[in-house]
Length: 69
Image (tube, rainbow, N blue to C red; front, side, top):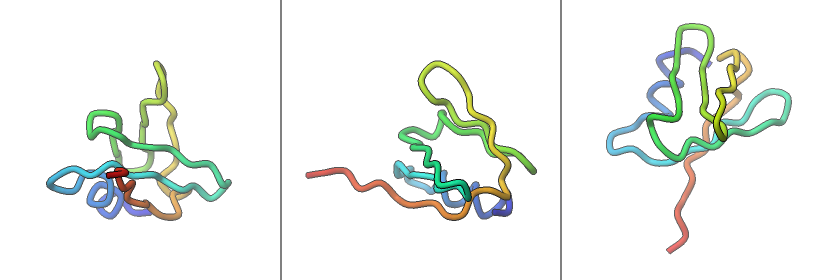
C-alpha cells in the first residue's frame, strides 16, 4: 500500500481505531494514533511494549474497528 493511502486510512480525522491486514495473514490493531508511524517504505506499530516493523507493500487493506455499544 502506498504511504499516502496507508496514512489516510490509519489516521482519519477524527481518529477511528483500525486493523491492518497483511499479505501473510497477520493482523495488527491500531487503537490509538500514537501507536503507529507510517514511513515511505515501512511502518512501525506498537505491539505490547515493542514495535513491529512492517513493509508497506505487505499491507493488503485497513479495516475500521467498530466499538461495541
